[in-house]
Image (cartoon, rainbow, N blue to C red):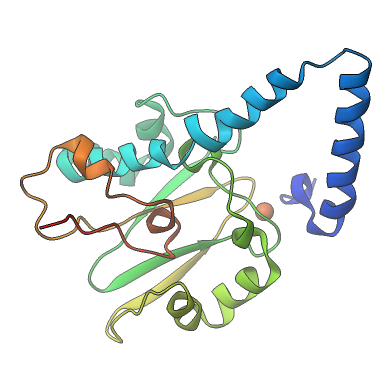
Length: 203
Ligand code: FE
């Protein structure tokens, strides 16, 4: 099986139609409760959303042992916080530094770490994002409002079904007084994909 076959973009339109048709038939026949479907979608959009990843990042910022574990064995370190499941079985965390900024893409489709980031944003699945992340990452980041210093290199990671990446952004300056929960609130979804940076706390 091709590593990306689970989500072949050339069939997404047709797949979307099929899913809708199936859902309406199942609901009409009383086989599926629409509220159960809504609950499932809500799980991935909100409960299993980027807040999980934000907690992973905040823990790494405050706990050097967890930080080291996260870089050595991201799958196990993330699982220790309870974030496990489909599309997150094999994780790698890549840490931003002053010299290197990491950016995650899936050039062939939309492989994405669901247990820590939830469902991917629409742009992550778009052809322009997937191609420009490779051809012109600096220009792409500029369109996201992220202008990196010329001295900062950009490293692009191509996700697959076998391995999903999470960016560990740098802890913002001026956050020494914040606890883990407050730090987690600064961590945006985009900062864990690499198309953004964490929020800066209000002075
Ligand atoms: Fe993929």
